[in-house]
Length: 76
Image (tube, rainbow, N blue to C red; front, side):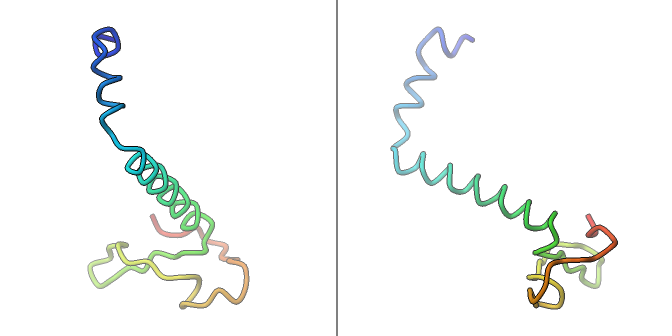
């Protein structure tokens, strides 16, 4: 509330260029879209030897020939 009263919030908002505001919005939207694709099964997490799930792959074995129909949820 202090930031709004002093006008600092408005100054910071006006200091960010419009192109950067658009880029941030697009980045957040793509991140949310990616999370949705992983949850829907279109993008799968690929565990490595250490059983981590950092790499991702498209579909099942790199194929998106059909809808994901796995009966087990993807590993989280």
